[in-house]
Image 1 (cartoon, one colour):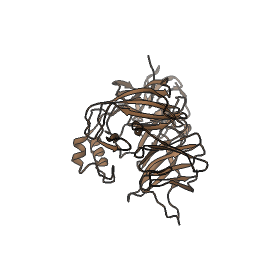
Image 2 (spheres, one colour):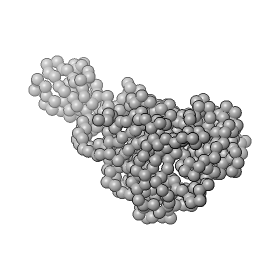
Image 3 (cartoon, rainbow, N blue to C red):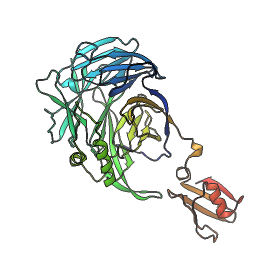
Image 4 (cartoon, rainbow, N blue to C red):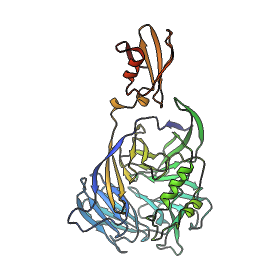
Length: 453
């Protein structure tokens, strides 16, 4: 029996505010063309990988430019199609699948410490550990016409390639919309999905920062109707999170129950509009010619997946994006590294989240003209003294001289005073801004005592 934890019970949502905006300053000639990835080290220096000029620009915590690394090429310290970065200890690892190479750069000096050629299947490198790399390999050749389910194997390869350990296997049932292929040293192209179905409810995976483990999230669990106070019956979805070590040992295996919602025609319209955006370019090609082509390619289930994506924070925290159309502000459920739920957070719709910690978000912001920048957002934790009526006073008991009455306050913010030992009739009051004012209106000022049930 696996442990199960309920998510989505805390209110209200935490907000965010811009702590730093990283962009060219007056007199600087560089600019971001197409940001591919963002990495953060222990000093909160920010590394920004730009796919347009294949350079990595380094900034301090306040957003001051420090240095530029790399450039276009196939030699050591150069990148052809760098895909992702990861900081492990004092080293920045850059994964360049098209070059079939992993490059290690010192975070202290910015110099190349190591450059490794990868084998054919290592083009699917997903992350770096303290002793090797994590590789994802498919069961055979994957190409743009793939329609059958694909089995992916998660392998940890020790540095030097002397030993490989199979740490997990998952089956991808929903084919992605578009494949991006890399040739590298292979005689035949291998494929990597870069644009997945927005409503796909299959497995997702993440390598933990620092490369200690791999997280596998199974979102293809059950959906049930459950009673919710003040809401009647609502849909509940479950998902399973598994954390595996580099040796394949299970470090964590827990199921989560989360609020679920149905897919509406409005949801589909918003997804189509966002994916038909002319700014979406893959391998220099716009994948869809018109909105109808997007609509025809979409999988359209009746229910949203339990979560649409998840992140492992640089501090080990877990972030789960709540199901909603991509054009809406992103809302995330959050857990500490120890598994304790904290206030959910809302992220502005113009920021695409890349890296997170409990108190900070590093994301890519894009202006209306397509100009990109990096925004560092600070998470503003709600003040418990100012929590909403619905979350703070859902169940209260009020004692009144001569009679007792029980009060339930639901999402409609309606005060229902039920007759107790006395003969006071049922009364409903709407619109009062505070509980105290509602009770005063019902019984008169100075006669009531308020306490938690």
